[in-house]
Image (cartoon, rainbow, N blue to C red; front, side, top):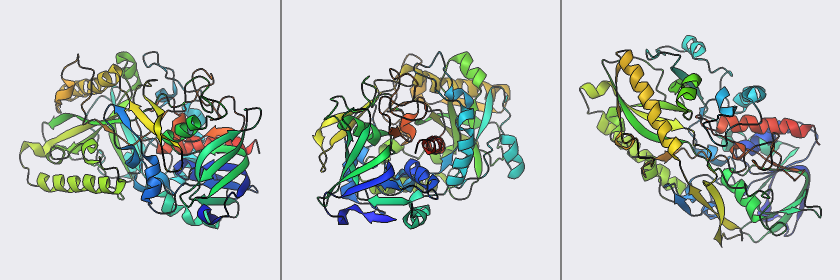
Length: 510
């Protein structure tokens, strides 16, 4: 069922069993999981079914610290959320990502990968992927020409990815709108969470839109699935009853913002051409491919973060501008046009390159960011057009981040040399081991994580192992905001799995 909240009588009261705030990957995944159950599920979406710049403007805000994308264009504000322009890259986190690592401050999840495995398998279906199997040998039998580089697999292994072409806004609009149990309200922006007299339960959520309509939503359980930045913003902005905001008694809401650092870091020059389809992919065509990853034992030995290296032909990569440069328009459509135009231009120029460069690659890092409490979301003094204080982002990286990127290529370089396969050449910004800084060209993956991190200890996290906000019995957070650490893979598969696990937990409560 679909209701446009702009067309409701002003001050309408909306009631249900569960209220999900946000119709992106997390929110839609949970709603679909309740589609055939005899409960009323309210799904609130701040935008409509298409891009609306007035709604998108609500995401505007300021950034500081390490250079970042304009906040307005760093995510999408309509049904389907940021899956409207994602690349579809999916891989589960590794066992190590969930463990406490003594060399990674603030690491460790209260759950293990085994706890998520059944939900990873279920998320594969939601994301319209293949089997829940990311073993290289399995895919080597399934697909042709997946020839691996001749590296010691006890040091460097092939981390497999699968690729989704599912756009939640297109794939799931029809089943959600036709559902009798899901009540989708578009143009229903949450502007405040209200607690009951005990201040231990959410009693209602206030919603508003640009038509001047204000409504109240009441439910037994509330799930914030607005995205990492917006979830933290809403908890902080709901501060009329608790001056620090909801769930923020220990000043943790908004802290530990994490991104995947995605930065061209080195060049690989092969001794001769090496035919393989393992390390390349084409959107909409490739079922599975790999990136080079560092073994857990080696990460422990060198006390480094978890990351991977992807390959792009150097003849093309040398003409490709950093996304942090091409994606600087506050309109995400214009930024996307700028980025794709550069990619087309680089590919055209690269076609003319001949000689040794034809068997050379640019190596791009995708690596977790060390959890850092100073990397955070706060509220600005300016308010948006619906009266909510804007979110400001301070993105701060650490020396461990830089050390880990450099170490990946030192390890790969040694493997390339030992196998007489080729040579690694570090990019300029990695050559000075005493320089902990990153250049402004350092890309993020638009992968926002960590601002309401998970921990069984309320002094170390905002939500518990079931994604419930500490101290508030009926308020839950869905999505990558709950990640204590970010691992190397893109977050969509894991956040969908974690959301489905939360959905199962709620089934025991209603």
